[in-house]
Length: 152
Ligand code: RB5
Image (cartoon, rainbow, N blue to C red; front, top):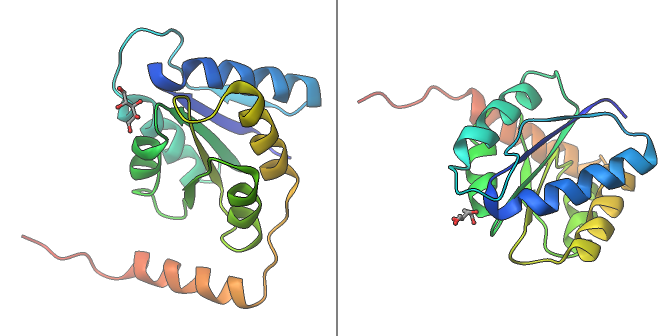
């Protein structure tokens, strides 16, 4: 596994620290894009730089944490090639890999506890993309990204 980009706001800070512990235990390299405390901050400031580097291929995957997971998903999916999914249970994590080849996992620190989050991350890391008909669908998403954007 290539490096993982980690990002969080204050709502996901503790979750991010728990994810780091898990990645350390498994010897999986990562870079922590912050935040580094429970102090209130703005999630785009952390999700943006991390998602940009997943989009550019510097990082194979990202794990982004905020209060609900929603903000992280919204920011991450602005970047071409990023497929971010909010997963609040292991089933969603498995499906996001099998069918969507999700390369960013978003977790909500106000939704799941630390033990649930570790199980979700483990499942997400260990599940491979199924390909086949699902690859065709992802190709169609890439086509949409390539469409000219409307101008004002
Ligand atoms: C912060 O209060 C909260 O809005 C943020 O962590 C996240 O849930 C946004 O989607």
